[in-house]
Image (cartoon, rainbow, N blue to C red; front, top):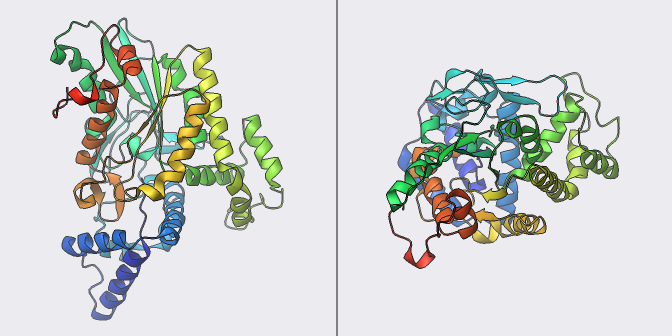
Length: 410
């Protein structure tokens, strides 16, 4: 997901910034070899305090991404230039691909029928505001629909939709039966409802307002290690724009957290006066809210007779430490277990690959086309070995035993 700089890497880049200012080389990009070697050193020396600091800066990045601020550490154009920012790059909020919703809990959404450029790649949305090809609301006969709920990684930040893992999944599903030598008249559509910086609550709201109307046959709820931070940003924004909190369980948490009207007032810049205090008060409730989101979505899906599953995906170069991701992953698995949901852990997908090969930029840990292909491979390998999900997709067919899984994608 969003950029997370380790302490050593930030310090090194600050030193470069100072040196560049002294010698007048303000816009000289950092050599790729330097970025690669320092990234590896930073990873090798990471510790829990570094990771906590990294998550703090990730929050700043997403606040900048959504709100148009300077981003992490208030970085300006000079710093971003030194980090290799291309001249044509703009922040998500400034790219003209989203519209903000007045006093609305969803807060923002992709603009329908966009044909633009985001991070140097074509960014196209269909008439329903999905980063993907055109689809009809009415499901054609013989079509099995999968609705993907997620954030920027799932949306395909920095890649064209034809390269994102959701689109690749659709293509694979439509060719798999023939590849394995059995007949199937079923066609598949993977509808990508993910939007950059969407919190778990916004994913739930997106299902209720949008995805449900398309009558999906399977819903995939995608999670990352930064979801609690996205929840924090989203709720602060909901307070800032005076949106109704919509869900009773959210209102209950806000009441029990003791968030006051005074804290929700705005200063002269239109920012929350008590933002830091609100964040501190909400922190103990993040996982409770997450559980409530999944419980509500699971109940909605059960009522509509729609299977639901969870997915956990990594950020490039940021979730490779198994011990660091263990607590959040354990909580997500516990939530899935409480609501009897299958959950696929894809967090090790990038572990053995140099991050420089997978990220869209040295300063942005969203996966590039190769990274999305790796996610697609990891997801499909899980699907073909999971009898429950495989038979849902291909009725009457047996999944492939893990021991018999071929090296190439089946």
